[in-house]
Amino acid sequence: MEDIEEDTSEEEVVTTEENDHTEGGSDSGEIDYSDSGEIDWSAVDFAGGDINYESVDWGEVSWEDFDWTAADEIDWGEIDFAEFDWSDSAAMADFDWGAVDWGEIDWAADASSIDWGVVDWGEFDWTASDEIDWGEIDFAEFDWGDSAAMGDFDWGAVDFATFDWDTEGSEYFTTIDWGEVSWSDMGESYADINWAYIDFSDFDIGKKGDYAQIDWGEIDWADFSNADSDNLAGLDWGEVDWSKIDYTGEGSDVAAIDWALIDWSELDIGKKGDYARIDWGEIDWAELSNADSDNLAGLDWGEVDWSKIDYTGEGSDVDAIDWALIDWSELDIGKKGDYARIDWGEIDWGELYGASESSLAAIDWGEIDWSDIDWSGAGADAELIDWESVQWSELDWGTSAKSDASKIDWDAVGWEEVGLDDLATVNTIRWEDFDQTLDAATIELINAQLTGLGLTLNDLV
Image 1: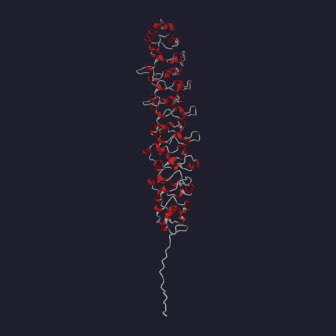
Image 2: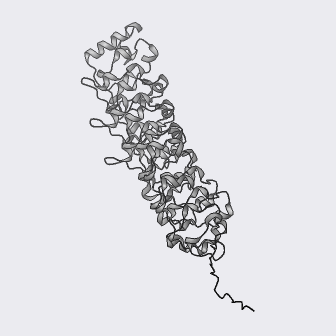
Image 3: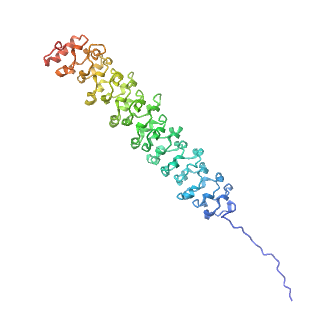
């Protein structure tokens, strides 16, 4: 019997280690990214440097399992934010926004892929805010109605200098609810804001409102000259803190403000009102005089502090004021009133007569300090005053040195304009109170005007 020889040769056995991409998966280089939702992300070694970021379906990642202590090992510039399931609020709630290295983000490419309304600003690392290109953020996505979420947003950390103010256009900036901005946090950011694009209609008013939080002495008032008309229409000028304005020095606020833009009807009056906080001697009166008629109509001339006006020197306030615009009915009378604060010898009497009849009729001629008037010389006030408009009955008559009659130079009066051919006008003048000896020429002129009434000066005194 033939012996059968046993084959003792060993069969070659090939063993392979399957890639395990589930719980307790192997090293990162062997991870199968085809089902990113099944990967145990807490076991992924991002520091290995061989993560295939492009193969990951970031919308399937379970952020709950993520090892956020290893977040600094992630190359955030390689993550495709467009794949995130932004609508899955539960999943996104597990995302730690404070762990993102914003310095690695490709802002031009990635910013539009991030749903900024989903970002939890409470987790945000505001110390890294300088790494954010704020001009790339889509503010339209913010949940402006969520006061709690917006309360976590640190506006003082926003670098407004990164905003492309000149080319974005006003439409982009209307996506920001400026009423939700915490203006008290701004600090040095004021200088980087282009106020022309701020929609003030979003602002809250009142002692604790947005207007009260703004440091009005720090904003760039020159921006307002280029503001959209709708934005300006939304600005409540009565909520501006005029006491914060810098009224002195080269490049001050007062020089930058376009006074023609102000809607004066919105300002508060009274001793503690807005008018009282304005330095009227420093504003640009020429600019104000060119204001829209509606804006000027709201100006309460009785609230102007006329004592602050510069009445002397070339280019002074008194030269720039358009005296035809003043509504004299609003001025206060009396020793401490508005009339008493005006230097009547410096105003432009010729300009004053460009005023409406109703405004001229409102002038209280008895409140004018006639001792201020320049009575002689070429171009003197006496030559510019329209003597026919003077309401003689309003003057303080008498022979005392303090009376109006004693302060008027009757020889300088334009008697041919007075209207002495009208007996009613003649009777409004207290001729007996003339405290000076009239020149012969003046007497002759007066008599010539009285001829039509069959009277002479002797008949009146």
